[in-house]
Image (cartoon, rainbow, N blue to C red; front, side, top):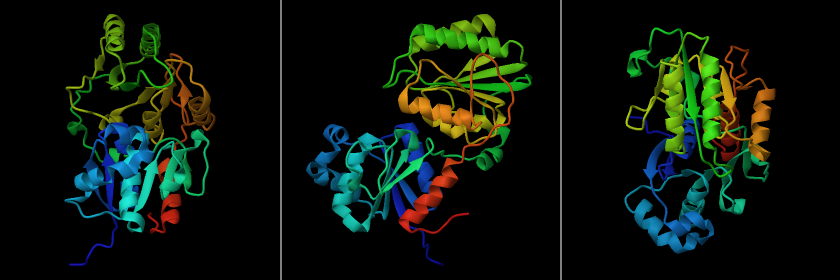
Amino acid sequence: MKKSTKKNGWVISDGTKGMENQSLALAKLLNINFMLIKFNPPYLLKKFPLLRKLFVFTIKNHLLKNNTPPTIIITTGKRMAGVSMALKLILKDKVKTVHIQNPKVPFEYFDLLLIPEHDNVTAKNVIQTKGALSFFNYSELKKIEEKKIKLIKSNKKNLILLMIGGNNKRYKPKNSDYYYLSMKIVEATKNLNCQLVVLLSRRTPLKAIKILNSSFLKRNENFHIMTSSEQNLYPDILKITDYVIVTSDSVNMISETATLPTPLFVSYLSKEISKISNFLKNLEELGIIKNFEGKLFNYKKVKLNTNKETILKVNKFLGLQKIT
C-alpha cells in the first residue's frame, strides 16, 4: 500500500462552533490528514497568551502525551492563541502554527496568521481574508439529499431562512430592536408564498426569542423557530433556501452564506461602526449582499470567494502543493 504523503495536522478547539468551523475549513482546504482536538485552555492561558511558558507541562500532559506530534497546528481566536504559542515553544521548527483572527499578541509567535482585512493589520506572516473562511461549499450542499434535511417543507413556494445573532462585544440590542426586526420580516413575507425558518445563536437572549415568537404568531402562521434541542439544520438547510436574512453581528454566517448564489440580506439590530461597518459596506458595493429593509427580491449576486483566494496564498506561504 502506498504510504500517504499528506502532512498531519491538529485542529485545536475549545468547542466554540464559529471559530472551530473556521479552523476545520482551513484544514480541509489544506488537504491534510487532520485530527480535531477539543481542549479548554486554563483561564490564565486564555486571558494572557504570553504566559505560555508557565503552561508547558500542562500542554505536554494534555495534548502530547498520547498523540503523535503534528506538522501543522491550526487554532482560531485569541483564547486559543496561548495553546498554539505553547506548542510552538515545545515543538519548535518541527511544527508550523497557523492562527486565524487577530491574537492581540506579537505576530512573531506564529508561523502564519489569517486575519480579516477589515481588521486593517499587516505583517510579513499575515494573510488578509475577506471575512471568515467557510467550512462548506456550494458543491457539497448540492449533493445533500433533501429527505435528510429533517424539516418538513410546506407546500409554500419559497423558504426564507432568518439567522439571528444577539449580544456581542460591540453592543447589546434592545427589545425594541428585535421587535422592529420582526415587523420587517412580517412586511417582507406578507405578499410572498413562503415558509419562514429561524435559526438562533447562543448569543440570542431569551427575551428576544419570545418577542419574535409572539410577533410571528400574530402575523405569520408559516414559521418555525428552531430550538437548541432540535436537529442542527445548518448548513444543510441552505440547499432548499430561497432567501437568507442574517443580522449584521453574525460575520461568520454572512461570510459563509455569501459564498452561495442564494440572495443574501443583512439586517442591522444596531448601528455597526468601524471595521464591521466597512466590511459590510464593501460586500454591498461588490454586489454580494443587500441591506434588508423589509423587502426580499432576487438580484444578480456576486459570490464571495474567500476560501479559494486564501488557500492559494496559504499554500504558497507554507510551500505546500497547489490544490485544484
